[in-house]
Amino acid sequence: MKSEFTQSAKEQGVETSEEPEVSFGASPMVFGMLNGKIPQMDMKTPSTLKIEGTTITGQPAADIHVEDMTLSQEPVAGTLRASTTVPDQFLLASFQKAIAEQSGYDALGNLVVTAITANDAEDDLEVEFAGGLATLSLKPEARDGKLAIDAKEASLFGFDLPEQATSAISNALAEGMEEQLAGQQLTFESVDVGAGELTLTLIGHDVPMSELDSATAPAQQAPAN
Image (tube, rainbow, N blue to C red; front, side, top):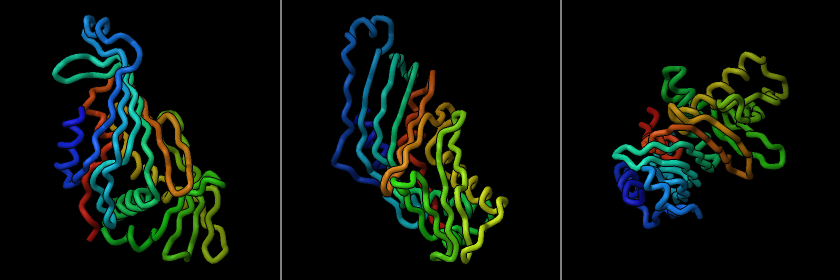
């Protein structure tokens, strides 16, 4: 697992001197191994996240808990839970990329959304448009396994924005985050807004360990034109 983490980082052009911390819990491994499974595994992976504009490489730090992992060439976790914390810059890059993809114009995301700030006191995300021309407060939460982001307040020159506009913005951010973090067999369990960061917990059952990359390693993106 440690060597795979280091190799994955190198493939994304990120060098790291830290290695994941791996432990196997209090349950006797020998009994589980006789049944062809590892009863429990906990892993902490360090952050190798690197963000330049809308280009994301590396991966955020993560705490991973695995139960009943099969001992096979392609191991499968009976249960996998992964918690990862991403900074404001990651949120901004994901949002800008989602807007660019939806509009078909790469530079639009950079022009429209200029800042995102996670606000612990208000438990929301403050989104700034065009250098402060408009603002939007968003409330993220896990809902039915999906990442739901609802608009709380939106204003342009002090006037409220229409619901259609705020819904489109909320959906763009949610879709961008899901694309980066959730794989095919992982769902969102919880979301916690901190000061300048967002912690997301994902869970899945009968999950191939190859799916772990989806929870902790965002795919490398091409920079916006």
